[in-house]
Each structure stands twice: as structure tokens, then as C-alpha cells.
Figure 1 (cartoon, rainbow, N blue to C red):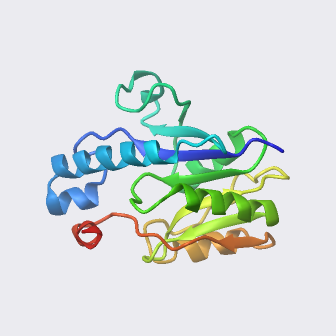
Figure 2 (tube, rainbow, N blue to C red; figure 1 turned 180 degrees about the horizontal axis):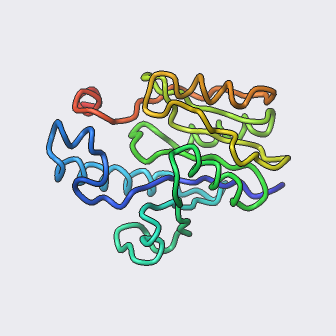
Figure 3 (tube, rainbow, N blue to C red; figure 1 turned 135 degrees about the vertical axis):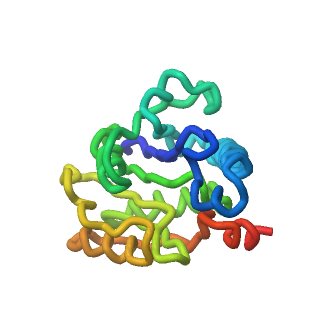
Length: 194
């Protein structure tokens, strides 16, 4: 069986550079602090021998310079482009085998969510984890064939259409749906966690 790869997309948690929508409502420093704490908790929860965990970091220089993210985990530069271009690059560059990409701002992700996602990839071509706002918290592909470079072009990111656009771009693949999980973009999202 090929190695399962889980990639967590992260930004260096500097005020004004991460969770800026949330920061406009609660302050940039508290938003960056929340993201750092949330991401570290997520990383600790998701380390598991059933998959290889890697961190896709931004800005790219933090592959080498970051002292925030755990040093024992592999780091990959996200690179340039919109979210779709960066995710496609990660999907294409991952070692052979099933790969899933998640964001770090979803407090509800558990190991069982990840295990279920990989089980879905055993049976189908892809898996997507919906978010209530029309986006998604996870995308995974079996990768039995190469991922086309522009497969996520034209997706309306940060909109209620992001998941529907992505599914339309992946037509022809057998896609499973994972559990719906809430990401944190606003103060209301943060309050809903409590």
C-alpha cells in the first residue's frame, strides 16, 4: 500500500498576515495568537502512524526560518498563486499515493475524520470535507493518475460557491463527502465554538 500523506496548510502567525478577517473584528494580535494556538493543537492531535504528516508553510522562506512549527515534521513551501494553484502544486508534488490537504483553522478535526477521509480514498477517486459556508476544510485525491495543473482554476475562493465550483472542476471523479466541519473566519465563528 502506498504511503498516505496528510498536508496541513499554514501561514506564519504574524499579526496582520494571518486570519485578517477575524483580526478586523477581534484585533490582529488576538487573531494571530488564536491561529498559532489552534494550529499547534491540530498538529499535535493529527500526528499518527497511519499517515505521513507534512506542513505546507507560507511565506515560503519559513520552510527554513520558522521556529514556531514543529521541527521534526517535513515542511513544504506553498509557493505563489491563489489557493487553488497552491493546493494543486501540493497535490502534484506529494509522494505517490493518496493525499489529503486540510486547513489549520478548523478546530473540530480529529484523527477519525482523517482516517475516514483516507478510507474514502480507498474506495473512490477523491474526497471533500464541506464547511457550512459553502467552502471546504479538506480535499483529497487517490492520485492514481497525474493531477492536471489547472484543475482548480476558476474556483471562486472565499465564497459560498467554492465547494460547488471545485466539484464541478473535478467532474468525472468519484468523490465522497466527509463530515461537515466549521472553519473560523469571523468572530461569530469563534463564538460558536464556545
